Image 1 (cartoon, rainbow, N blue to C red):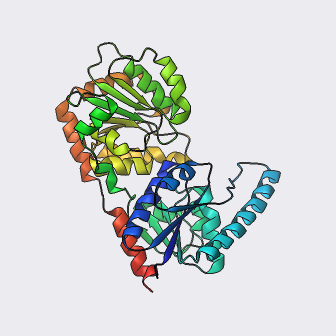
Image 2: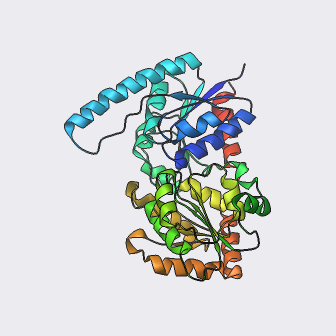
Image 3: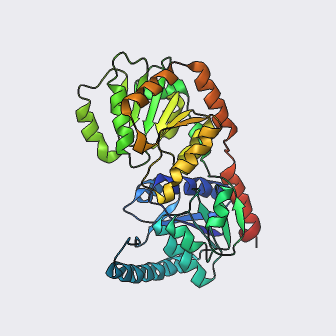
Length: 363
C-alpha cells in the first residue's frame, strides 16, 4: 500500500512551487500526496489544479506586537494544531514535509504530537518564523543554502539540497511561446515578473520601460492580479511590443520567449532562473525577514549572472537605460546566461524524494 506524504505550507510562490516540485518527484516515486494549506492564499488556487488533494486548515499569522494579539494567536495556533491532528489521523499520514509560511507550523507541530516523522525545507538564506519554530521538532532540516544551518535551532540533521524546481519550466519553445503572446520570436524580449502576487516597484520600472521612446525590445509584463487593471489603464493605448498578463501559470512560456528577466530575488525564482540559464536584473524585496532577498541576489551578482538594483537606491530611468543596454548586447547576455546556468540544478526535487524515501519512507 502506498505511503501518504503530506506537504504543508504556502502563502507565496516561494513556498508553494518548490513544494509542488518535491511533491511531483515523490508521486513519481510511488507515494500518495496531500497538501495542507490556507484556502485563501496561493496554494488554495494552485494546488487544486494539480493531481494533489488540497486540504484547507485554519491559518494563524503571528502578530508583530501587542499582548492581546499574541494571546489570540496562541489559542488560534492550538485550534489549528488540533484540526491538523484530526486531518493527519484521517489521512493516515506517514510523513509530513513543511515548506515554510505560517500555515506550515500547525501540521508539522501536529505531526510531532502524533509521532509522525517530519522534515522542513527552508528556501531562503534567512529562515522564516514558522521554520524557526518547526526546526525544533523536525527530524530533518533541508536547506537551500548551507549558511542557513546555523540560523535554525534544534538538533535535527541538516542537508543542503538547493531549492527544488519543477522540470516543466523547460517545457516550451521560443517560437510557440511568442505565438501564444503575440510577440516576435526574432526580437529581444524583457520578461517582467514581481512574483505570484506582483510587486509595485517592479511594475513601475516595467511601465517606464514600456513607454521608452525608440524601444528596441519587447516587454512581457506579468503584473500580478491586483495591479493588472490599473496598469492596463495606465498603458492605454498599449505601446507596441508590450504584452500584459495578470497572472501566469505557464511560466515555461514566459521564460522561453525572454532574453532578460526583471524580477525580485526570492529563492524559488532564482532557482528557476539558474536552472534554465536566464540573465536577470534583480530588485530584491526590502519587505522580507532580515533582507534575505538581497543576500540571495548578491550570490548571482558575484558570479556574473545578474545585476542587482537595491530598491532604496532605485533610479527608474537609470535602470531602464541599463535594461536597454543589456538587451542590445548579445555577448553580455550570453555570458550572463552561461554563468546562471552554471549555478542551476534541475535534479533537486528528485534528490529530496530519494533522501526522504531512504531515511523515512522505506520502512
